[in-house]
Length: 476
Image 1 (cartoon, rainbow, N blue to C red):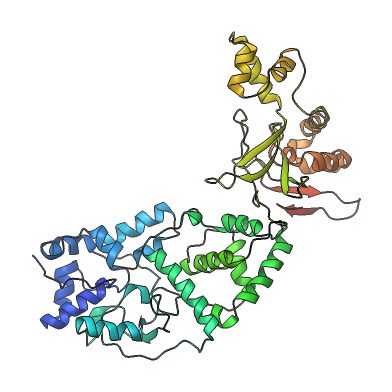
Image 2: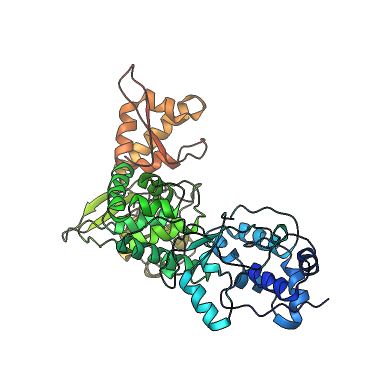
């Protein structure tokens, strides 16, 4: 069965196209929906049964179900920051009719008065546009006008009139001119999400990336102080009226926690748009800029083997002679290095500026190549180290920090002797050794203990007898 729907207007919702067809043909709503989708319900934003709709409109549209989902529904907007698995599952649900429910539906459909006038002048009728239905967007991305809400049932078959008549009242409060400019910038960034026009800077957008960029702008590394500074700047930039119009609450602290310090992936596109506009607007402070990110970090040692993907939980910050901040780190594999920044494609992988100690894994690799009959100069060329370093290892000298090695061996003995290899009990037994190792080599405590399970980014500070043990998460 072929159904000849009218050609979609620019940025038109699939719901709007079907509504116009019902109006033109004067057919029953139930009949049109069932003939088109094989069911009676048409969701305005995430319609299901698009593969069937593609087959029955192919003669006129030549669009696949995937193309209809990308070009005529709100699917691209809601998929922007979801995982690949959820994207595939959502798209599969739109293509088929499996009665999956979605919760991305606002109460009203919305329109822009200026767009309405232009549509009537150009097409002699108006229609529902996708860019006006983005949840949390208060103004038209094209003209900056406040959007007008029109109460319309989400299920087209539940209405006595299917023509998309545009009646409603502006629900948004009055904004100042500066607030309108801010809302327009956020709306246009959301439009980029809808049109899947990704900015390369935000390719892996999430709390960790936003924290890194905030640090590059000059905010400090400690979470409490960093949060306080960001909240203060955020309140200066966005009023409670704007925040209330964009989301469900007007509390700046709640927005900051959701954007910068959330432990789960943020899927709300408006929250990402606010974060990106906020960070883009902030001036750069080169004196306070921290380019190496909030951590934790991967180990750049190519020969190290780690039970954790991010074994480096602590770094020491230092200023060079030009007063530029850099970090020094000691991984549990013994590799010690300094770095200014992380990789452009992986914000958790340090770019090594200087190697401080290579560690035992490099020693093993040098000896392995030597046993294979490779000459010293070739070993140095392969490993990109000096011939002198190769000679030191082969003559019996170590590339590790001897004081750290001594402390590690003492700690390993304590761990082995402690009941059930319990680090907490071991620390209580020899708190002086624990405190010293925590100060000079904290990452070894966090991710390496013989016979023990893998540990997360936590350490324990041992107080005098009779006081409680205080646990710290991630930061000193």
